Image (cartoon, rainbow, N blue to C red; front, side, top):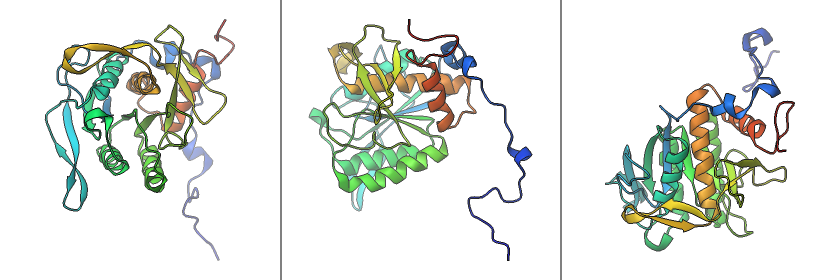
Length: 274
């Protein structure tokens, strides 16, 4: 009796799925994103909204918000605006790294950074369903009752090639979704170079980018100087956009590998920290 395994190779042969491997020495920052400005990549900021036409952000392609509907949280179109400045700050950093990407926003936070796990989940689900290439989440929830659904949604995004870049919590607590392996998790470093990012050999945080004493866009067309993993995360989001614009065939697994190999603290025969 012959059984067909659901997740097996079926009637394909090894030659049917062969592919060219990328040599370790070939993956350099220049190879990965050199010359790329993120053109053609759709990035969604799941946050407090994004202020329209901020000088450091520019055009916002679409804006949505999560509201309480009759049967629970629902997403509806809205004018691009920001309730507290946090989302605009993230969008400005993304635009700095990938100036030609297409920026979208879904608001899940209200004034004074208030929000709920249910709104976060609804906003993320909507973003995944829209098929955005990269989703920036500089926020998380500590409520474990949302963990299972968030985990399933993060896995769904992974298989759909929607890259969720999630901020680690600023304090040593367990929160979600940054702790899931199917997302790309980010913490901050305090080095002065804004372009420097590092691979973390000690999980669960995977990468570090500049997030301390950062000048960011804020409400009212202005700027503020602030600190937090929230502001390291969009640097990696922008980098993902730049890489995917140059190498659109990459899966999430391959993208993480490229980020690992191109990190400043990872040595190859050609490069590494001196």
